[in-house]
Amino acid sequence: MKDIPPNAFSALRAVDFKILMSASLSNVFDYVDSHVEDFIEGLGGLLRIPSIAVENRGLKEAAGYLQKTMEGLGFVTEVCQTLGSPVVFGERLEDPSQPTVLIYGHYDVQPAEPLDAWVSPPFEPTVRDGRIYARGAGDNKGQLYAQLMGVKSYLAVHKRLPVNIEFLFEGEEENDSPNLRDFILSHERQLKADLVYVSDGPLHENGAPMIVLGVRGIISIELKATGPNRDLHSGNWGGPIPNPAYKLIKAISSMKDPETGRVVIKGFYDNVRNVTKEERQAIRILPLDGVRLAEDLGVQTLREANAESFYESLMFWPNLNVCAVHSGVDVPGIKTIIPSVATAKIDIRLVADQNPDYVFERFRDHVAESDLSIEVIRHGQMWPARTPLSSPYVRKIAKAVEDAHGAKPLIYPCAGGSLPTYVFTEVLDLPVISVPYANADESNHAPNENLTIENFVKGIKTCCSVFDRIGQK
Image (cartoon, rainbow, N blue to C red; front, side, top):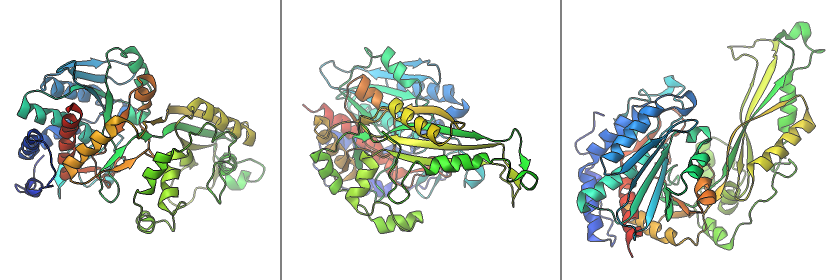
């Protein structure tokens, strides 16, 4: 990438957080500051690969790029084929007596459309105003590449790591990771670790660093209602011929109480885990400017106005969302037809202890009660996951984040979004701790996705500090 001002990183180098840290870590941070441009160029090579899972594009190329990068760091690597995209695995075992950290990330990205909304082409990484713009810059290539450069920086200074490292990078996260669980089950003996460390998602909207201890699960569903076997003129046929769009409207509108927003599907809230005293204390101190947030989002008000109820709703309760509805043909003006087909796409977010199969069955039963002719199609799912606040690694990683950011992180018991980390908590029985590196306005899944250079650098430093803190006896 070009057009990087020569003094772009001077402010970063000048920052003195006045934090008491080991001299060995301070030297590593100095190395990071002096090699930022090289790290950005390396990331650019990965960002140029259009590794779009849903289109089956560029996946082998991205996997090969990561394998080559890991091999350059002294890792024993393997590109493992699955029924879908390949999984890239690498390990560097320094000493059996040291803790082992398994680092997860994903190299697949969302489609870049609408292309005309991008200021610069999505797969030609560009630096503007201290930000790296490209599809995948924040989600998740920039963040996983920061992990790799964290290893590179620590090794450059100390020649060895204070922990054993395993990297596991998949290429189907944006498609609900359908083959990851089978991969984990077939490699369970190889994936021996003490902790799973993840960097995905953005920092808090006010820029504060975060530690996230869980994710909601997800079920992706499509509804399909059919009417006449072809589109019909609404004047010639309107009245005696039923319109499939109304079937969907009736079914969807019956799913939530319009006043409270509560889902009214029978059994939807079954098996929801109770919020612990420690988790409730954690969310009470999380910041929220509800007025400013509503203003920024262009809504009149938030359904949950105070911080505690806002975060409780986001972290500890399931939700049903209509993300797309389609009927007829989208043309300028109006095309007066009775459409032959109407579809809706829905995502259901799940919380700890909820079973996706059970919830899907309750959803399907509800749709059938509304209209038996509506087809219910399940596209994919992820289970929820949660690591307790009492995990001994929470405090160590909190210190590591403070080393890199100069501020104590906010502790999130759970994120509102979804990642396939249940394969680690449920299958491998390992704690999973996530530290997002991306800026809050990264525009992931949207045009002009970006990662600030400052956050990229802090991500590399955080990774180095995580190694240092966990490796301390």
